[in-house]
Structure formats: structure tokens, C-alpha cells
Amino acid sequence: MRDRFPWIAVGILLFSYVLWNYLASSAKRSEHAETLSTYRALPDGARGIFLLAKSHNLPVQRSQVPFQQLSEKDALIILGANLQEPLNAPAWRTQESETQTLLKLIQNGMTVVFVIHGSATQDSHPQNPKLESLPNEATEKFLEAFDVRLSQIKSEMEEDTPPPETLSPAFPSPYLIGVNKLKATPTHFIQINPEKTLPLLSADNSHETKYAAVIAPLGQGKLIFIAAPTLAINRNLLSEDNATFWLHMLQALAKEHREIFFDESHHGFEEKITIAKLGAGYNLQYVIFQLILAAVLWFFSLKHFGRPKAPVEMAQYESAVYFQGQSHVLQAGKHYSHAANVILQRLVEEFIQHFSLQPKTQLSTLIEHLNSLHAEKAAQALESLAQTAVETQSNPSLLALARQATAIRQHFLPKKDKENESG
Image: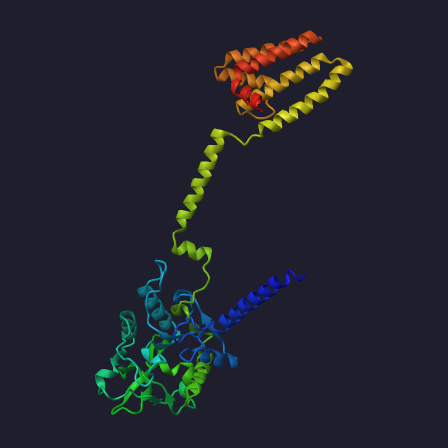
């Protein structure tokens, strides 16, 4: 035991190190998630909003599926995203199809809360964010369907003037109950059509009224568009009325819809793929073709080479045991005709194995098969041996039958005879 103690101690230390790293990595499981993902617990994440909703028993879930699998009866919240083509996506999930599907869901009654992606969510220099990042083309086309356009803050303000950090309600709304002031830095100002769009949040410290969030109806549903991504980050939930804003918005959505989904598909979190989805997106017909090809190759190989045969050594051992038992019968009762039939049957079995016939093929069937193969001499030799076996009634005649059977085997089954010799 004392000799093994050093190894046991080293093993315990290694196990403790691995366990500690595992627990530490589990505690940091949210670091790999993108900014404004509900899986991210860091200051620039959005996990706080999801936990806030869960603590008030609101029907919220994370969605890891494409828009095609959602229902217009539910509400969808997209935090910090640009509508873009997913990486390694199948052919049916393209940028345009995702946008059109989302518009169709809104027209049928879905409410979508869309918080734009922006560099202001970064921890570095939150007071002076980089404002050169713009929404991609798919996002701009999506917003044009609601007659909503974005303008850069840098083009409307002086270079040295920081963007506004305080937002206030523009008009009374059920989504703004109890909200007086919000702390958030908009990345863009929203240009709206007053006849179609309702302002939701405005920037306080600008010279003229500028909007950072709007409600844009479309069909039976609506879009709540927010151009201030820092409104959703964990760090700002304890500031001003940010938490109140999200709580009352989620409560209002819960009254209007069946469930509320936080879209995590655009953050790289996707549902486990199934066989049906694999076939729909990755050409299942090629897999089926390979299975059919394998079945065809198996069929022709079985037809050409026949079924697997027992090893030669096993057949020789079985024959030796069988003839040992038959020798006792012959010595006790002098059954020469029975011994002759045993020799004949053994030779017939060798012919059956050589020509890949059924194991219990009769002698007459074997002779017909040999005639069909134009092996008349072999058929005549077997017929003659069968006639000799019937007439065998003495030890010399049995020995002559054995010699005749050996000659037939060596002449018509030379390959088999060589195998027996080598064995």
C-alpha cells in the first residue's frame, strides 16, 4: 500500500484539477454566447431579461429553430441581431426566405420585438461607442416593409457631441406602464411615417425630437423596433426604469399571445438536427441510393460466390468422428451395404459442396445437374458407384468401392483433394 501511495496521491491531484476546471468552465458557460444573447450572463449579455420574466412566471422560452417553425399565435423577441443568412444553413433556409417568413408571421398576428444589433453594447468605451456599424441590407429591407428608416447619429450631431443616453416615453402605451426614464444609448435614430408608425421612445437631450423605439403595425400583427441595444443589457437593468420597461412589455405580450420566444437561432444556438431535417436540407436521396447499391452488390455477390461455407478442417473432423462410429457398426454386424452407402453419401456431399447446391440434394438431382453442366462422365461415374454400393456384400468388394470412390474424387474434384491433403 505504501508503494502505491504516491500514485494514488498523483491521481487524486489530477482528478481534483480536472474537476475544478470542469466546474469553472460550467460557471463560465455563458461566455461563448454572443452579445445580447439570453444565455450570456456577462454585463453585455441579456440573460437578466429572461430570468426577470421567469421570476414573474411569464410564458417565456428560448427558440433555437428557424422562423418557419414558429406560430403567429406567439410573440418573438429578437435581441441584438441583424437578419442575415445563417452559417452552414441548408438550401431552404436563406436570407430572403427567413425575412419573408418573418413578415408573413407578423401579418398573420405575431408581435415581434426587434432590438437592433450595435457596437454600443461593447464594454469598452460605453460612453463613446463606435457608430459606424450599420444594419445589413436584409435588415433594411425588412424595416422598409414597415416604412421605417434609420439615420446615423453621427450625421445628425456634431463630432464632439456624445449620443443621448436617456430615453423617455414618446406617447402613452401599455408597454410603458410605470416608465419615466430609461438609460440606454441609441445607435441610430428612427425616421417614421406618422400615419403608419407610433413612436414609443424618444431621446431627451437632443435639440429636436428623435425616436429610438417605435411600434409599426403590419396586417394583424406589429413590430416593436428598438434602436438602443444597451436598453437590454444586464448592466443597465438596475438603472432607471429599464427593468420596469421590460417587465411590463413582457406582461403585455403575455396577455396578447400564447407564448413569448427569445430567438437564439441567430446567436448560433440551434435545435438538434433530426433525420427528417437532415433529409430535407442535405440530400437524403444520396443516402438511400447508397443503401440500394449496397443491397444490389450483396445480392449479386451472394449469387456468384454462394453462401458462406464451413471451414475444411471442421468438415474433416466431423467426417472422422462419423466414420469412427460407423466402423463400430460394421465390426459388430458386418453391415457392408451400410458402409458402402456411407462412402457413397460422403462423395455425394463433396460434389454438392463443389457445385454449390443445396445441402440435402438427392443423388438423382445431382446427376441431373451434372448432365445439365455437360459433365456426363462424372454423372456416369456416380451412377456406377451407386450400383456398386448396392451389390457390396463383402470386405473385398467394400475395399474396391472405396478405391473407386477415391479415383472419382481425384479425377473430378482435384482441387478438393489438394485441400484435403494440405489439411
